[in-house]
Image (cartoon, rainbow, N blue to C red; front, side, top):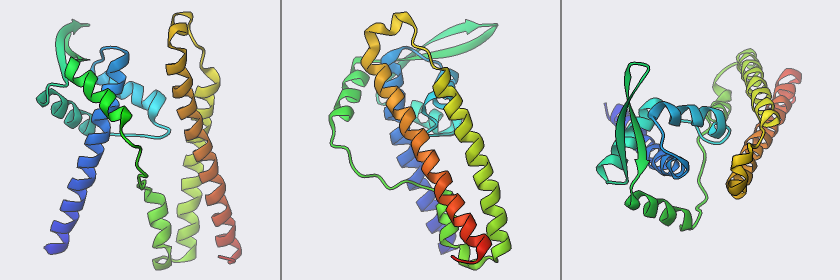
Length: 200
């Protein structure tokens, strides 16, 4: 029972950290324009997934926190016969975003489920290790190709000329995600070879 409670506590802390990060991310997105929750999720999937991902649950929790804090507000509209809430920043939210942007950047340990599995690979046999890594590497390559394709397809519309700095740093963040993915693929392929040859 104690172990279960410890797991729940750790999970709640991790989720809380995710909500805090997501809240700041949402404030940043709303600095650009008003968005529905589906717009936010779509932007995450298309532009921010190389270095940050979250579920609808985390997005909803962050929006609730921002609304309660008076950092965002919303208007309701009907689109294709459905009611939608479009969220926008309040002045408090705008001030909060700039305050966060000016904070010292801390070194943040990342959560990597794959690396955590590798840490405990000594508990399973080599055939299982090879099978797990083979599938993971294949999925990494699919995601890498998608990210690379997206990067190559990007065109900057003329009306974004006055937002050149904003676009430049968003593209730099995408490039970071692609290079990180390339490193991860190379690292796991090297480990895969070691497992296959028994030289780990």
